[in-house]
Length: 410
Image 1 (cartoon, one colour):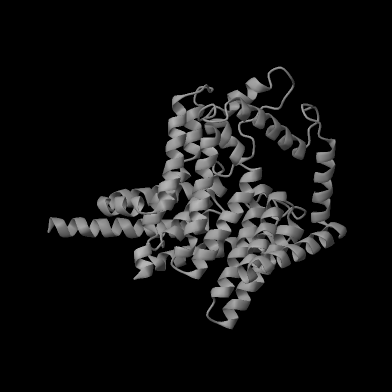
Image 2: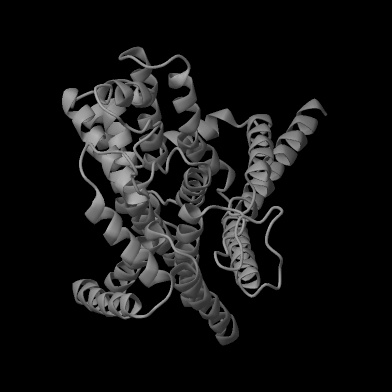
């Protein structure tokens, strides 16, 4: 009787964690607070469900989980050396906890039915953001309150730096769902959503990171379709589209012109009146100098703020807690070892994607890496809540279906 009750509790806890993980697909694009609640439910269900030996075997046998845990372990070791401001090591480690969630999601979302539901939940949430954005633009929904934007800048609940990438990946997701659709009506519906996400992320809302991710995913789609010839064709189409957008008055043209002007005005070391692009270039310049001081193992986890302040002490400089570049941020803290660990994680995901459970999951996994590789050039995405959690959640979801070589050969 006791064993039966324990098994029932374990099963109930496991199902609760699975449904909470599915619900994260809805919450990640819209609500940080709801994310936190659902993560607590996932963790509680994961802990209460037992099956520790099976969880250990699944985690140990999944190279993506191992690579993510290795990067976090390196960050943990980085707290043992270097100098930092009080509390910064713990604060940075908490920012990188999403790396640990990958292993949890790989277990929780092992059921292919729940993985499909989770993907549809994300697709629905992104569609809601998309529709609200257009309604704000049309003044159908009044700006203000919980909404972040207005009719001239119709972002919904996230900032520009997040809205653009969400729309870019949303367009990619909808296109892949269209390819996988069983019926013509569903295929047309997904294609319409993909087109609307493309329009919203390029012509309606300005955001350089989003623009570049759209371009990178377009190149990947070309490669998927026709290999290197398809890549070249996609590059030609993308170049033509960018040329048309630059020549056409609108949000895209205005944003590109502004960036060109800001880059032209930037002078290394001069920080008075720095523009947005100039600030980032200054962050990059100083960060590279910090990396060169200790290139192998870096200055230690959580060291960036102090190292940046020390490096710029002899001149006027903007304070910074991260360089808005994940590669530089990890190199400042962990040196080339940190960069190698991050790249190993990305390469492992790319290399193992063909072993995923379906062509849809294979294409989404590689599209996710394309997005992360580009996004991390301009943001410290593993530290950012929405982007970091979306990456961890999708990685766990997709690589929960990783097949072993023996399974595939069998």
